[in-house]
Length: 303
Image (cartoon, rainbow, N blue to C red; front, top):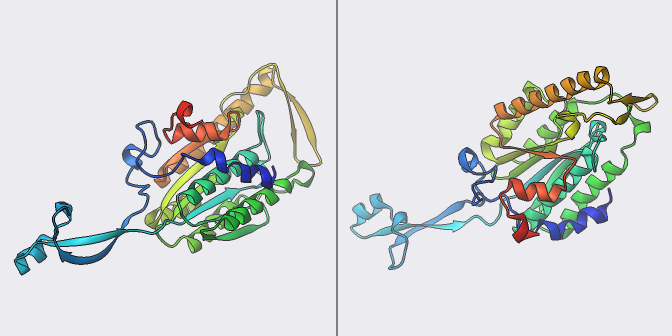
C-alpha cells in the first residue's frame, strides 16, 4: 500500500458523502438518520419577518411580546471536522481474498478523508498499530489529507509477518481515547478496524464519542470469517512459526469456521450495543464499490 495509491483514490470518492440525505438502501437511513446529521445550523439573530422568509422560523413568543412578526435567523455551520480512526495492527495483516484487511482499512479511510475534503470539511485522524498511536489534527487543506494518508501508508508498509509479536488488543481503546481528546463535539468520527479485542471499555468509548459527535463503525472482515471454502490450502504464520492448513479436510476447516464466525458475531453484537451505526466491509470486493452500495449510491450512475 503506497501513499500514491491512497492519493489517487480522490477521484473515486467524488459523488460520495456521509450526509443524511441517502437513498432508502443506505445504512444511514431509518433509525440512524438522526445520528449522522451533516452540517447543523447556528442561531444568528432575531429580526423582523420579511416576505419570502420561512414561516417555520417565526419566534411566536417574541412576536406576541412585540406585536410584530419576528424571525429566528440561522446560518449553516461552516464545517464539520472529520476524524478517521484507522487500525493498522498486526492482526489486520491478514487476507484470503483480493487484499489484506490492513489495505482495505487504508483504502476506506482514504475514501472517507477525500469525501470530507470535497465537502469542505476539516480532515484529521488517529492511526495506530500495536506500538504507536499517531494523531493528525483536523485541518482543511490538501496537505493535511496527504499527511494523514502518509501516516496510514507508513504504518501499512511496516506490517510484515517476520515482525509479528504479541498482539496489543488494548491499542484500540487507546486510539479511541485519543479520538475523544480530539473530537470534543460536532465531529464526524469514522472508526475503521476489525475491532479485535473490543470489550466493555471499547463499547463505552464508542458511546462517549457518539454522545456529542456523529460516529460510524466500519468493520473490516475477511470472508474466511463467514465461510472457509473447501479444496484450498491456507498458510498462517505468527512470525517465526509457519503452518500450512488443508481446508479440504473437514476436521481442519470446521473448527476454524466456527471460531471465525463466532468471533465476527461477537464483535458485531458489541458494536450494535454501542449504538453506533455499523457498516461491514469485506476484503474480497473492491472497497469503493462496497462503500457506494452501503451509502445507497447507484454504481452505474457514479462509476
